[in-house]
Length: 243
Image (cartoon, one colour):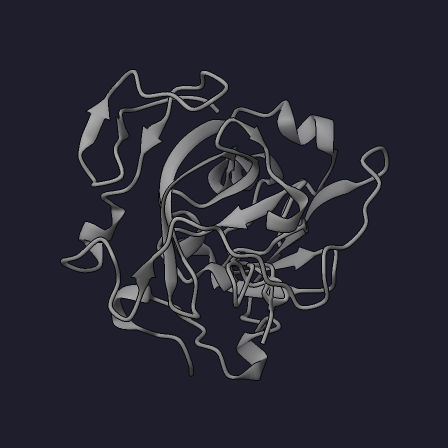
């Protein structure tokens, strides 16, 4: 199995699963989970907001049950890394919105951004801790697109045809972002660059790689892996891997 949007089986769900595999803010943290201080930075000097204690809302342990920690960042995908044209690629937001968006990559990178230290959990059983992602928070897109009150679900779309769904409420959690940077550099293409979604409170197939846009829906529509038996809720601390 490959993850499309995440190096799914290896990492996000893009071929396996497409979702799996700035700047500033709060204190960083070291790999053991201890706060490293408000001046924590990544390679490009950006201040880092530490979200590695997010697990406390879901379980007792930072490493979810059934997961093993790895220092590697495996790469898997549904059909390999897609090609894209940086001059013509657009990021779009449409559906149940008052102000549909169509932004160039440069325009996306010009939006208010954050850098956050998060943990990354693949449905295949591995977790990479302390990932520093830079990008645009999901809530920023919600505000700019003027999402309607009747919108309750989202469907992420990716350049390779991958899709994945989440309730709108889940997407407004801390840490959900459209990431274009990783550890102070551009997000590598095999990890979902130019833009991917990260969802630290879900298995990574919920974070589409190579994301081309987000559709806001009034009714739920299942994504690629969800239609094939993977959990629609994908809570790592409850081991919600399959439906």
